[in-house]
Image (tube, rainbow, N blue to C red; front, side, top):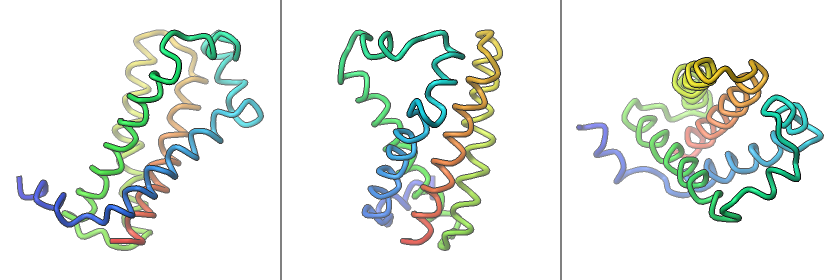
Length: 141
């Protein structure tokens, strides 16, 4: 568990900025003018239906928690691996996103029979968000 000891040495400003970048990228990525309209078509939902989901603002809490945990773990692993440049940590974020996040979308969406468009849009978001988060963490080791 030596890698876990790096949590004491991470740059919390870098984690906060990485988290904020992930949220901003998600906001922009899923705007109707970017990929939001295509994504809504692929999941067969309208903007009105999505806004009417039960839970209101509370549905954001788990998503924000997941994004925060991703940034924290990325910082811990980057520290443990000595990834202290934007390029190396960004590349690590890219690889982690392709393998774990996009791979997860492929598996879960495949079994659920969801449109490939959903997998591509969601995977693209995760790849960009984790790559940028990694670059930020690497820039502020």
